[in-house]
Length: 274
Image (tube, rainbow, N blue to C red; front, side, top):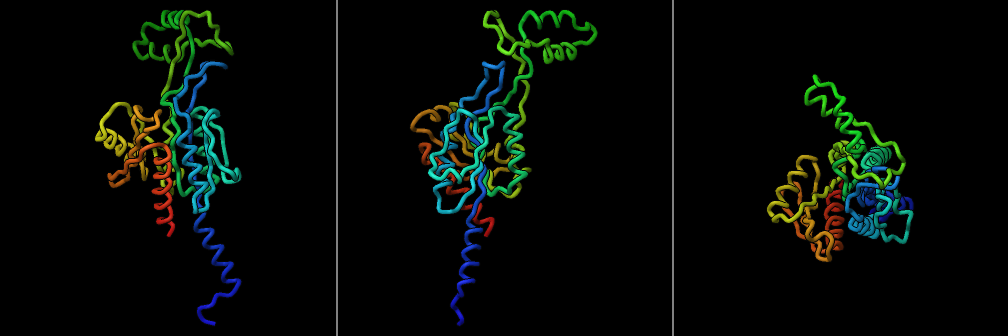
């Protein structure tokens, strides 16, 4: 009869609706760290609290989600009853995060990417002490010039101890620029709704918007959550969710920020698939 669906049609329609509502979400959370030796690290201050809240909101939402969660070992974990909703990978260093992002993006096509992890700008290149460095500089080729001396500083005779002795009066740690994970995301997830994060300290709202929009444009994000360090560690954590057209919304408190990000990214992802 016209206008009446058969049982088979109802099943097919149900499967189609379920498929359309399923969202593949990638979230990074916590803070990276770089080893100086086996017991000492240079770390970022990211706790993963906001990333965990965002993952929790996605898991509890009406739209079905498969969440891939990349976090540091010490990061806060999402509060999810059904652990099968979240596929977790541990990434402590910048390079391990880069490898994990590349691996999961090659295995799955993501609809939404929320890159909330506090990623270090620098990695440990070498560890030495003043005496070793001074000896290397003294033995450098005098005709090499500044470039030659720079190479000695960048590649000094290193300390090979698994745990560097605490009896040393000084330690020289040479850092090098780390890869920018956010700059890789659009190429790895070309169709995803991507949200980046920008943290500044003690700046005006106008400056937050300006810098956040610059990050968004440079890395072809859809949104950037810009926040100020003055509020991040407090209950009054404030954030500005900036869109590609330059508009932005305020959110107050981590719960509110998480809800805003989930709502805006889900709406845009579903609109793109409609």
